[in-house]
Amino acid sequence: GENVEQHPSTLSVQEGDSAVIKCTYSDSASNYFPWYKQELGKRPQLIIDIRSNVGEKKDQRIAVTLNKTAKHFSLHITETQPEDSAVYFCAASTGGFKTIFGAGTRLFVKA
Amino acid sequence: GAVVSQHPSRVICKSGTSVKIECRSLDFQATTMFWYRQFPKKSLMLMATSNEGSKATYEQGVEKDKFLINHASLTLSTLTVTSAHPEDSSFYICSAWDRPDQPQHFGDGTRLSIL
Image (cartoon, rainbow over all chains, first blue to last red; front, side):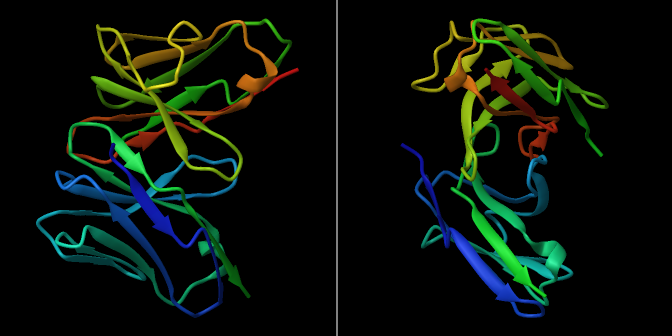
C-alpha cells in the first residue's frame, strides 16, 4: 500500500544552524505534499506545502523541495530558533483522497 | 482561515463508558472529515474517513462497531468510542478540508484517558 518514509526520527541542531528533514513516498500518483508542525499536545499546523508541478517553494526561513522522479521531498529550515522545536510531519496526498503521513521528526533546537 | 473545532479537549472516564467526540468546521462546509489516532511520540494514524450523508470508510484494523462515526451535516462529524477500555486511551484528532486539493485543517484533539 501507500507509504511515506521520513528521516531522521530525531534531529538536534544548534540555534542558527539549518535543519533538513527528508521524506520518500511510494504512490506515484501523489501530487500534493504538505508539511505540518506539531507542538506537544497541540494540533498539527500546516507550515508549507508543495504541488507536483513545482520543484521548490520557499516561505521566509522554510523551504520545500520535490523530486518527482525519485519520489523524494525535503523540508529545509534555515537560521533555526528555539521556537522551531517541535515534531514535523511530512505527508503525501493524491489530492482528493486520503493523506498518508510520515512517522514524524522530533526537532530540537538548542539555544 | 478555515477553523476546525473539536470537543471535548480532554476526557477521563471509567472503563465501559461510551465517549462522544465532536468535530465541527466553523467557517466552511466539510463534505469530508478525517479521524486520526495518535499514540505518544508517534505519527497520525488514520482511523476513518467520514463523508457527509453516507457511511464512514474505516481503515484496515479499525473496528467500526467500536468507533462509531456519524457525519450528519456539512459542518459536524462525531466519533463515539463505545464501551471504552484502557487500551482505547489515546489522543484523537479530527481534520477536514474545504476543498479536496487543499490542506487538511486539524482540530485541537481530544485526549482520552480510560481508567
